Amino acid sequence: MAKSIVVTGASSGIGRATAERFLDQGWQVALLARREDALETVAKGHAGALVCPCDVTDAAEVDRSFDAAMKKFGRIDALFNNAGMFGRQAPIDELSIDEWRAALDVNLTGMFLCARAAFGRMRNQNPQGGRIINNGSISAHAPRENSVTYTTTKHAITGLTKSLSLDGRPFDIACGQIDIGNARTELVEALNARLLAADPNAVLNPTMDVADVADAVWNMAKLPATANVQFMTIMATKMPFVGRG
Image 1 (cartoon, rainbow, N blue to C red):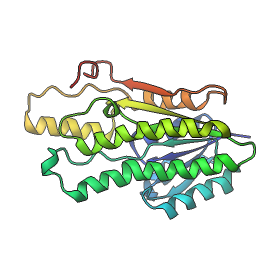
Image 2: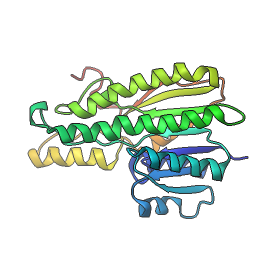
Image 3: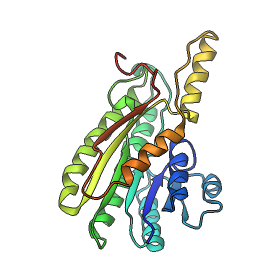
Image 4: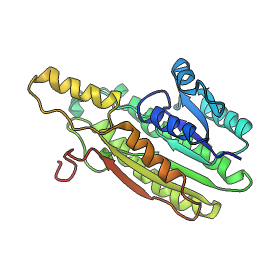
């Protein structure tokens, strides 16, 4: 029987590239995101795809989506907990409370809700177990300028990953984190566009192909139950991570 994975934020960027990679490898993939039309585009031509329009900040919608995946696939072998937002770049005193809460809702509460849904089903399915892969970020280690909301949430994801890894051991649930730097997505393209708008001669962020990230997630997910990548960092070779501050 084909293995199954839930991918959040599957309508674009890293989530879409990863979902397509797993579909190409013959996995059954539940596609979660808010934009149903974009999910339908990803699913087109793939019998193993399940379109699940879902706001990951809504606990009821998350549970409905995971229930739908269980009903169609019979079990959930993996979750790529990926959905997130960057938010407006600004010093902390220029950010509104609403902007702060919006980032927390998606990047932290949303990932908590999806991990919670996956963990519960993996714990109770037969055979028991599965794998949760959280999308951290280079910002889980070193921040970009004026990114206090995003950076704070991504540091918190490291704590979530460690807790799930520890608490999942008795149930054969592995948890790892992939920290990604400058994959060529809409988010990074927007950052580069803002740099150019401020200075037409600006040095742009070096980037890497998003397909390379999808390959990394695939390699984490296909490991046997006896092995786990606890933390992986994958980034554009020339981005200033080491020495960044």
